[in-house]
Image 1 (cartoon, rainbow, N blue to C red):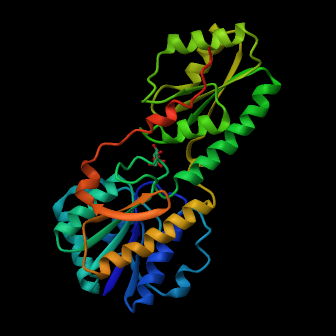
Image 2 (image 1 turned 180 degrees about the vertical axis):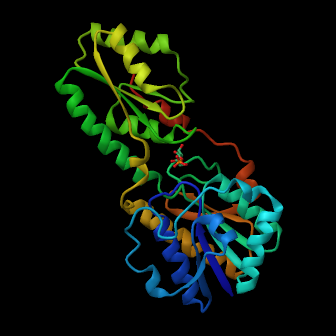
Length: 317
Ligand code: F6P
């Protein structure tokens, strides 16, 4: 058997650990392993290289993805995927492990329908894939956000300011709500909490009126412009205010212990599924345990929001 592996979409710490596990597990079973560079784009362009044991040495602890990544909208088109399938067939590659988010999953299902068995691993800092409790990269990005917010807290306290910080996560509030709890943010704003500017300004003014020295507001990405919110806070609450966008800093860095272990287990498990002839499957996490379901089921599930966590958010008044 010949297995290819690729990483696609936004990179996430732990992707390398998953790639390593796929390659080494495949080699262990006497299969050939191929790295596909720059995601589906590289697959279409034929950027494919046979990998040996040493090619995936020294990467378990490294952030980013040694294979490179991309987003290829055109992969939705059948004629584009046909080029990809031909490239795989020319090399005799039977099966693929793809690591990425929802878009990557859709590509994997489409390739499976075209005769290439694919296994999808959840690799995204956003933790927005419904089928899996945790995705590879989420906890590392969370640690990065926590480290940054702790630093903002130091200066916020010193200057008696309100600090507004935007946390990345696309449309998913997980990184914001988890980091808000972990950093003791006074206010957390996500899609799930909703955003009412007047209400937030009232809460901040009240905090100032009762003598709270400083305040942290965590705002999830794609909710509101944090620089405008900081201006409004400064104009209305009695606090000076500053805004910071954490952005792509959250995507970098060495993977945490959790992400290394989860990614290693998932990579190895994916090869086991291919060995028994399965395709069109998504690997899922139940904490650090791994399991699988159909990609189609994974894509049709709606996200079970982390509503229990929201009850642990601070109550200002
Ligand atoms: O999906 C990961 C992610 O980092 C999101 O949190 C963010 O919205 C998006 O990717 C940013 O994408 P890009 O790196 O293409 O700007």
